[in-house]
Length: 483
Image (cartoon, rainbow, N blue to C red):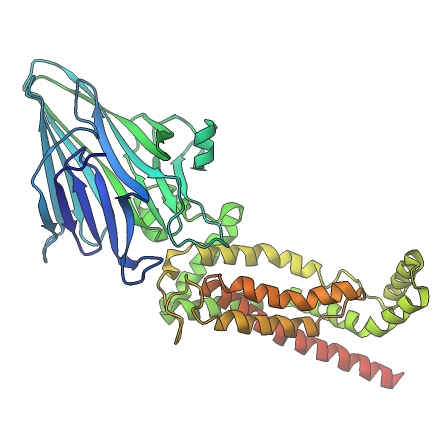
């Protein structure tokens, strides 16, 4: 793509470059966020480089009107949002030499906002009636953002929302196969490109019947956009319209205020009904403590308290099973390889002692959806990005640079393994001992916020399990003395 003169726009939250060739937004830096790889650089959401292409384009359809391939007249240079100003504008013009039709395309940037208005004014001095359709699209390659973890999958690609079909992801491989599944026409909705923590989306007003499209654009690129009917320009008249582009972080309260369904780009999947209130609670805690790390700690404690009755049943069952371990071992030695008799003897023992061997598992299973929801909440929240905790933890969305939290978490898992009943199968017992080490290595690459959650969860679980186990053992010892 040929480059033309450029305007460089600087506001209090971003730096943008607009190319006169097509009037494309070719570069966008979010100056309040750091690059995922080089912390000394600001995060670049939109860019056009040999290794990565992701830009915002728009144009007009009809009567030889300018498209994203048309060269506009643009005054190059720096456009800076000055103190006291609420907005800064970058206008560019195009004139049809045959008819005299003049098109002015204007970018409007606002203070403390990632919303950019892209407006058109069409003046028609000719005697022709000019029907106008406008398209607004995002063009990008199918690569994941640089610096994304290979161990944690997050979605990168187009997404759209309509009241009819709600939130829809359109994966690049679906576009390649022509298997897109979304309403092509709608009287409402938006379309955008989503990546971990950030989104860019065109947000046309509800009402006009628009056409959504996603398609391959060649050279490994994909376009996702919307075509809007803007009416007709009568002879001697003019027509003005605009469509906002949001290009910035996935701050949920901001997205909710901008457009219906835009907050769904912070995607918790099927567990959204659980994850949404969890994040709401996390935000409320943060309002009081002012630190996202301590907010995670407090939230984890509250969840553990909420599930304590279930956890108590689980730990009580584990403690009882732990007490039966010597007797189970004797049964195994007695029956040897006769698994049928061994199984029957074990069932008789459980029945005699009034112990449910699954009692330690079922209460845990009930809690799994909540803990998975919390996992996705912490993973998907841009609020964790660059959020410090204590001492060496400067970014809860990045791995612990010194692996302190994963190592401590591994130690807590070893302690938990010691507290649990030893499996009668020697191979299974060895696996249970190896798992904490394997998990620790795996968690080396997890965001510190997630590891902090698991660590606090483990510490509380150990305390609860130790307390309940001591109570069960004490009760059993007291019963034995009375007997």
